[in-house]
Image (cartoon, rainbow, N blue to C red; front, top):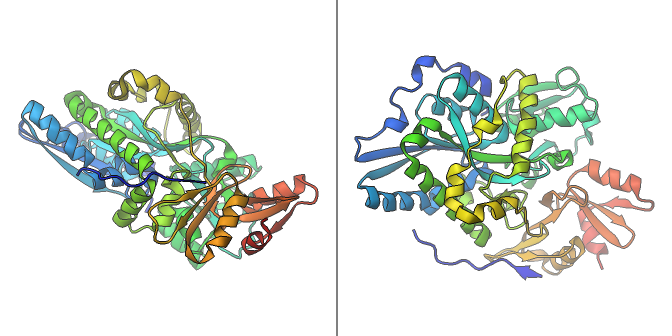
Length: 460
């Protein structure tokens, strides 16, 4: 068992993405937007972020909380004699960030991989090109997106979605997960299910009211609803084995005019990333305070062994996945061709890392996902296997704040008390969904499912 590092003192509703772009008249672009703000000596930098899309926190919520970007700009101001002001604009999805960027009103934005492609396409179409300059967080198997249904629902697999109503945010990465998952299961996502294009909050409400049967969404909605006892995982995006990530995009014109600001932003993002990695519990609490999300949900995704791995580098596997995403968006008529190679620009990040960039880009290291967070503690306890975790939980049952385990087949972290458990011989194995648990039982003679309470009783 090991513990996370102790805290150190630190200085101080989905709109269709295509529709959002189409509403922008061409005359709005390239005409004195955020990139031109200021009088030469005073420069305003506008950042578009998504506070509750917590896979972007190192370029948004956490970054803002730490004040890292402002400190970098103050240092830059001492060098060039300018005064910098940062304006933070918070959005629910990536669509309005793209709309504001191509209108010249946002300089730097963060969003998911599918919205990033639409950002690239709209920027090129409206002669206001953007560039992908960094990643915030990623999951190499696609587990940042999940399809959920209500607790007690008779839906247990993708096959059960035929003829059902499914809420999704068209153009988002979670919608891409839904489309791909249904297609792999031999289900036509347009004809065999009734898909409703809804903002995440609207879809969550629709699931509760029973007006939809399932909800496909991105971080942190599935985990939040599961934690609240309002949903259970039906399909784990990690089963797709296709990387998904969020990243940082910058208006090319702004980057050309203010390269020092871009450099300062990436330095601040790296600083926020290091802070999250060194102080994951405190980082989760900071994000929770800023967003109103439960800290336990934030830690599910952003913790030391969370679903997301935070690393700014533009890894080849992520870029390759981005290229595959283009076909999904084109099939949905949300974009035309996208030249991913020209959209990706790691020049600024390479300059920030120096000679260490190549090594950092190759690394995909990620800590153990099995952890327990006890009440009253600002650290977590990590374990080698789920049995060790269960023994610890049983011994500290009254003080457990949250327990996290990794799905035995996909590796996706989930709440231990919301997971499906299987006894296979002497082993007790957790699964995020009924489908993965059932698949294990079918393939292993003598294996059987059991509840969390029984798993706690039976662990030796």
